[in-house]
Length: 207
Length: 315
Ligand SMILES: [Zn+2]
Image (cartoon, rainbow over all chains, first blue to last red; front, top):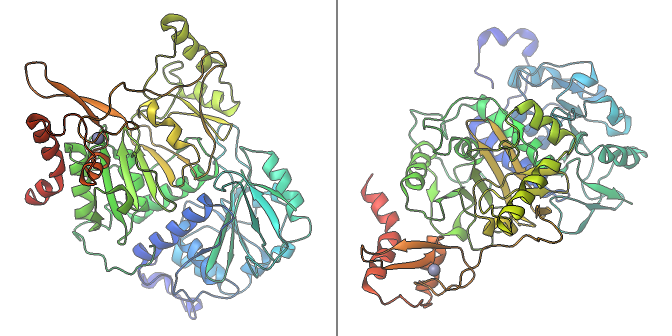
């Protein structure tokens, strides 16, 4: 977290957007929201935050980053996220190393899902350590306005209908391949505005 | 429930909830992976809690990483809110996080437990944190971590079935009554922690989030809500829970887990609910067991009902 170290406040940091004003409590709220989102998969969870992040990040996406990233978590940014104030924002407030190699990333920040790389270029974990897989944070225009899909699996009582918007045409075919790797595979958190939907690897999605 | 609505007030000699933010982030990331891979043991690092192992350090690390100022915490040990272990953990979080505490299962947003699942069904949004002394269900069969990891990695669970079947050939039934292994989401064999097997069926399709912390072994695992949890068994020897011929002596419950309580040195004894809040709540609503009028039994009941009072006096 930022400690206001003047050495880090270099001239090119002018215009740097502030992070959490109360890091301990805002991170706790954001964590509980994402814990609920990953636990009750497919439901829209509102995330209360006053963050005013750099474009193109939405407040929920920025809150996730500030809550989960630090110097231990290599982060990959897509071209849309890498353009503008986001890289400085994440380096300054989280100390997270930004990496170019997709396979090295613990987290991916995808601000333009229409151009996102295939899932299988990210870490899917190892047989003995399936937790060593990437978590993809994908910002979408809407969590409710897309094509309706049926989600089933842990965290869902029977089946639920979810309608994530803005995903590439082959997204759900790729997801089926990812789910088939279970217990390996990537996990996804969708973010839009001030809300989240969790999509852990154990969820089966059908059109 | 999750808003920063309530201003936190705690002993500011410590970071909120004791753990530093870096440790919390590490544990939080482990918790998210644990929820994504139900029943799989996620290793985590991080700093120690100021309690000896065996006092629930793993559960406390999980609770400390989850809890916020607007939470209400319940802590139980063997079903009781008033044991030394439960009281000291509750006091710890009152001091380092300033959170409200309760004995009422339905009022708690976070429940830390050692060895029981409350009798009252949990609700959506509640978090049940288990203290786990030994997270590895295969450890007694295979002492080497590299081997047990491989067995989980390739779902090689034959040994576990052999072990349970040995019970059957020796005793005629599966004699394991605590830490009875479960299969989670059809993939990982998991230790439910030393809860009685009576509680195992409550884990399946529970509406709450179940998180497990093992401090010494530094492992976290989880069962998300609405998840398949099957106790291992055999077609000819299906899984069964304990039953008692008698009802709770105090509240008359016939569907709860009962503890035997010795009342005097002349062999006087009774069976009462291990879940003290469940039992007191039933008695308050007018339910009576066969010994509800017995003076020695009433004295026992009173001593467990006033634990919150004792705790406040003791501060
Ligand atoms: Zn009772």
